[in-house]
Image (tube, rainbow, N blue to C red):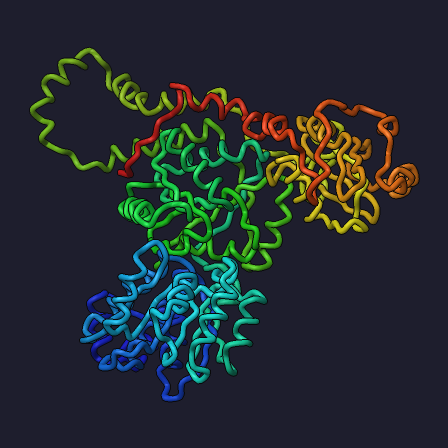
Amino acid sequence: MSTFQELGLNEDLLKGITDLGFVKPSEVQQKAIPLLLEGEDKDLVALAQTGTGKTAAFGFPMLQKIDIASRTTQGLILSPTRELCLQITNELKAYGKHCKGLNVVAIYGGSSISDQARAVKRGAQIIVATPGRMKDMISRNMVDISKIQYSVLDEADEMLNMGFKEDITDILSHTPDDKSTWLFSATMPKEVATIAKKFMYDPTEITVGNKNESTSNVTHEYYLVNARDRYQALKRLADANPDIFSVIFCRTKRDTQKVAENLIEDGYSAGALHGDLSQNQRDLVMKSFRNNQIQMLVATDVAARGIDVDDITHVINYQLPDEIETYTHRSGRTGRAGKTGVSMVIVSKSEVRKIKSIERIIKKSFDKKEIPSGSDIVEVQLMSLANKIHTTETNHEIDKHLESINELFADTEKDELIKKFFSVEFNRFFNYYQKSKDLGVVDSRGSDREGRDYSKQSNDARYFINVGSKDGFDWMKLKDFLKEQLELGRDDVFKVDVKESFSFFNTEKGLQEKVLAFFTDFKHDGRYVNVEVSEDKGRSRGGRNGGRRNERRSSGGSRKRDDKPRGDRRSSGGRRSEGGSYGKRSDRSDRRSNSRDDRRPAESSSASGSDRPRRSRRRD
């Protein structure tokens, strides 16, 4: 079916389609719309990437099947975020522009609940809602969904990732059992399959592409850097792409705000989008981004769900998501509407293994790229300026000033004039990058499967710790435990190797003193936890010293101060509190003084000086 007319839509909807300029239905629309318009109502699971037209795929059938003459709520659409909720609402109103009497109401947090309740009571045939606000209004008897005929779970995987499973379950319990449920999702993790099994009856499944597969319009690249150089790498990627219009993804709201603030301070046109912003702030940021006043939008995965912008050139994964499937959503922000895009990933050596996992899910290969050097960036910026000047249309209002300009440069040769003109732009990047270091990470023969270098020249320190699987730890739990106790970043603890009664882990050597000092007289669950520097750079120490340490463990936590392990241990730092499941220190200030911010690299610390290359805050 190559046209919307062939899909079976009525005249009012076809008029709306014409007004919107839609010409040809997308693949998911071709598959879903005829199926949902059939006389017999049925349940549907549709898997398709972000940006493939899923809203129209369920929106048109719902608009055609409801009774617009009735004021009863007949359709409920649940979406994960306020932005997406408003986006769906506006699109449905545009689709049904010629459907007289249609009332679509958005229900979401951050806005007056009483105003939303009044809008529903005026007769809302379709409600588009976020789960949290919808559940709240149901508990207050502000909405009645007991007679709905159609329910849609849009971006179902993301709603479950955000912890809305219980809310969705509660909301759907207030709906009729004989309703039709349409589930739309970009990925199909087990949680989504569970929802489908619980709330749907023999659903038909359609898939556009392969499950969890990335769109073919996006190329995937990764850049290997040291964790401390992550922000500098981000700036270089931006500088190497002068016309970048991008979304930069961070894992947490705190990191999102910090990265955005740093970019703005360094002269980039950037903005932050995360859950701590008010609705008005979020609207202003998105308006600026859509108007190209912001080139680099730094966002969390949750906040970015409502971004519907077709011209995004790059997606930059400043940090990889905790759930690998989420990468599919991120990369789907670019390469939309038939355009091409690039998804970049900045990874530390301990994260390289995740690239392989993502490749298996999206069924695409990553290209390993090097972070651009300073000279590369200077050349790119210079040629970008030259091309802009070459293609700029001449404004003849400048003619009246030519005589004065010609007099000023009367004694200047053509080549010299060109050099002077371009040096204005050239100098700021050249001065900044001429002494910059290479941010690339070179693999060596001594590297392990994660890319870490354990040769003699390695800058890593490896430790022995006398807890293992018997104590309830696996590698992830132990890594999280160490990060929390030591207040380290995600990438500061790596190569965690858990055995039955002991384990190994690595940090950079610069953190060695902090690690050893912290675990002096440290107790966990009533017994001492010992950490020592291991001379074995990555190989397990099976039973070499296991007996001595097991003897220490068998003391039941009554070890004397004289029993401290020999070696380069620091006794300063005071005793740790024995309360709490993780035995946190009471003197937190000592640990804060060793935070990651105190280890900021020289290039980053110098970035606040007057020699920083300033970027225009508005795209040309």
